[in-house]
Every structure is written in C-alpha cells, then in structure tokens.
Length: 198
Image (tube, rainbow, N blue to C red; front, side, top):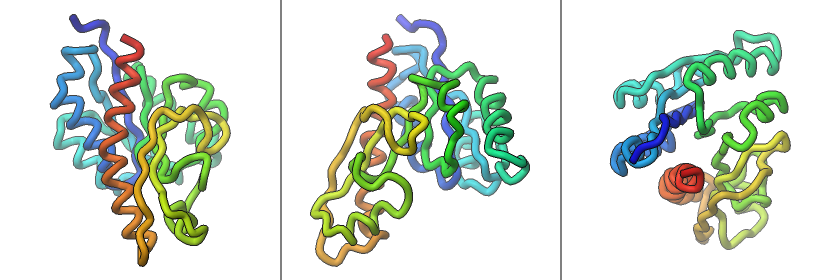
C-alpha cells in the first residue's frame, strides 16, 4: 500500500539524460503506487538546458533559476531552495547540475541530496575526470553515486560502477562508456533510497 507522497526534484544543467532515465524508470517500475514516489519537478540553472524539454514531454513540472541573474552563490542558492521547496522534496537529485552549492544549501537538504560523479571516488573529484584518469594511466574508471556534503564530491558512497579504460581511449570515448553505467546505477540508487526509507 502506498504511503504519503514522496517527491523527487531533479536539478540539471544540460541534456538531462540521467534525469530522463530516472523519470522513465519511476514510471516503468510504478514507484508512485509502490512507495508514493514521483519525480515532481526538474529545475535548471540554464534556460537552454535540453533536459527541460524532455521533462515537459514527460509531463513533469519545470523551472529555471538562472545563476547569472544573482550577485552571489548565496542569493542564487536561496532562490533555488525556494523553487525546490515548493515541491516538498523527499529527495533532491543532482543530475549533471554544474554548480558548486553553498554549505547552507547542502545543510538544508542534509540526508536527502545525492549526486552522480563520473569517477570512482575518492579518485578524481572535480572536473575533467575522464582525461585525468587516462593521463594517470588508470586501467579502470567509473562512476559514483554519493550523498552530497559541503566538501566537493565527498559524502557517503551509495553506488559505484566500473568500466575499463581501453587502449586508445579519449576523454570522449571513455565518457560515453561511463555514461551507459550512469544510466544503470542512478535509477537503482534512487530506488534504493526509498526502499530503505519504506
């Protein structure tokens, strides 16, 4: 029997492929009837983010909070929180959201804010992870879903997947291989969050 409504709000900055996979998995696996879980909104810091149109096509509410319109990170995060909190989220999912969040934002959603990062954390936090893995001579790379803390790309690991680094790989070819695993493990990690809470 379904419990009280549990809303997911997903934050994106680009194409939204991970967002779309999570939303489609929620529909396919009937998260709403099983746990009262639905993707309630998709919010971007960029009006041009392709994922907004994907979300609209799936009937999901969307909003844009352009970071360039705010004089400080704190002001941007305050408005972003206001938009998110309209949906009373049980979970906030960062899916290619390319903004460093303030400690106040992270604290506000402590325990219900997760991110996906394209490396096997703790290796290669930050940007350019695929090229850094290649440059370091790594034979494997991968992806990590983790709880968000005030420290960038730290926090409890919730899921990981490993992919090989192949001879002749470029950052682009490695990124494509990692992305296929992102699409597999992120919906599973979100589902597991609600299974644990059920």
